Length: 193
Image (cartoon, rainbow, N blue to C red; front, side):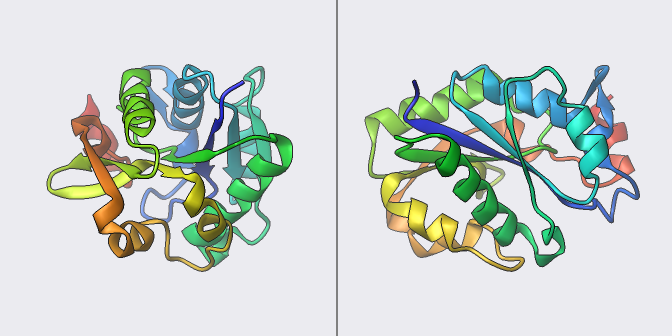
């Protein structure tokens, strides 16, 4: 049993995309399913936070070994989705000592990328391990046990980026070009092909 748990965020309404981008096919696989399979590959327990397109997103995860956490107040923003996901993960899995936060729309992040975060966490257990791309620190991120209470208490639109900035002296960056690609608009999707 892994002491690391993964929260996969798939609750937003994708207003810039214009429809449920979580369901958008990339190489024949819906974005959310692709991200969930990537997370499962690590061997860590995975909780997927759903919201705006709950029924559609949850149906795309059929047959996968993930827990589902519906966020009825998904409009409250990313921070509230993270908090709900972390609480659901910890309720389901005793012994979680670190939490990775993933986004469903980072289409190119692969199991090797996540494993590099996990390896860095094992090497620097007190650090916040974050993907580094194009001069940015961001998701996927792996937070140590000392950050779990902060994650559980997040609210509103502010995600974990503020926590990264406040704790910058504890951040260990892992270069991850794949993390730079996220699907926010139909043009982003077109550029993948």
